[in-house]
Length: 109
Length: 118
Image (cartoon, rainbow over all chains, first blue to last red; front, side):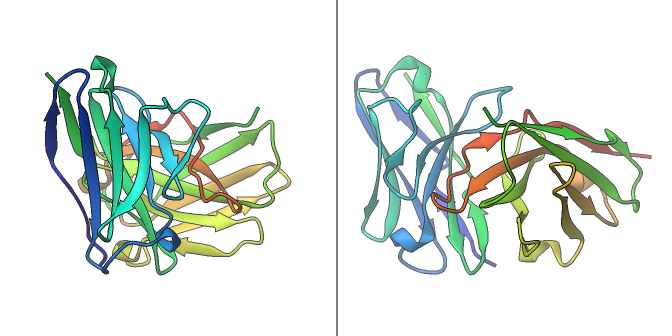
């Protein structure tokens, strides 16, 4: 079974920068794993921020960016805002199925 | 614009079959993977499976054949069935559109909470 690992929680100060990562037990992630990042706030459905590694939606704030770093997928937030406090999930494609990470709780403090 | 709406029983008894339907409005079924995702209360997300407009399917291997997804293009609907449910299957169930060209989980239903209890 594919296991996708994320940091359980990260704390960042307003205006700061933070990078969330996503690793797979299958090995280094590539663009062929279509890494996707979701933001979820309490009581809301998840919303995709980044798809296919680096692509943004029209609703994705410019301060969010996706990349591959050292075999992991990464979500970087530059100039963090208080409203960015949320749970973030990565999702990868492998072997015909999709697998979610356990989520990272981003705390803005 | 495309909208998705889940429907089905909110309460299912243990060992029975959970059945949900997603109705698509404002768009065609072609060239999309129609997907089910769930989230137990207070926990993370799980991709359950998807169906292409041709009828081909893929499922989470961990569900060991308990899940099946079908589609009815004449009604613009696709459905989820999960057999032999237990309390661990209590979750918010979402239907999601994933375009083939982008592999982007771009449009979600509002979700429906299904509780497994006797």
